[in-house]
Image: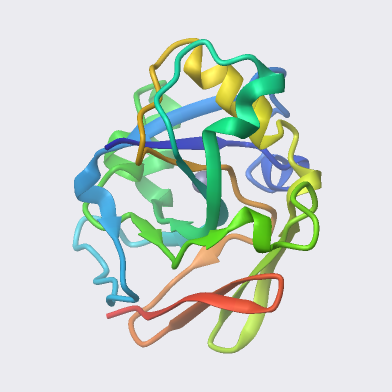
Amino acid sequence: MKIICIGRNYAAHAKELKNEVPTAPVFFMKPDTALLKDNAPFYIPTFSNEIHYEVELVIKISKNGKTILPQFAHKYYDQITVGIDFTARDLQEQCKEKGLPWEKAKAFDHSAVIGRFISLSDLPKKNEVSFSLSLNKKEVQQGVSNQMLFSIDQIIAYVSGFITLKTGDLIYTGTPAGVGPVKIGDRLEAKIENEVLLDFEIK
Ligand code: ZN
């Protein structure tokens, strides 16, 4: 399986990092070794002094497809959760300055934390999914899926024009404003609506 992540998909977050608001989805990938699941602790890697959390809605692809039309994209996923796209912000800034790829900053081991999946059909509004992240019990990020610059269906259509999507692939759909650093001893808890789907510690 592969992990596809969308960058700059919320205008307020693009602005907080002083990035332009994109006119087409920006995406990058993480390898399967980036996954961290079952509320396992995250160990801060030694190569960065600035690991940031980014809470994101994550969908799981439920059937294979390529060049999917936006109007059919909803047939390609039926489960959703919240995840953290951990980012070595210091390394990312260096990569961005030099115009280099972001893998060092984004694709490292355990940088893709994933919560427990729920069925989209269990949600009150499929196109208005609210989610949030708490750091040590204080809410630091919150978003609603209808604030995305590119909807999940648009993302699937766009990405599948370049890369075949396969059953089990994950798509991280971008983070709202409020990203920030983690330190040893922190606890992150992420919810969809009012249901906690992810709860883990930083070590
Ligand atoms: Zn992200």
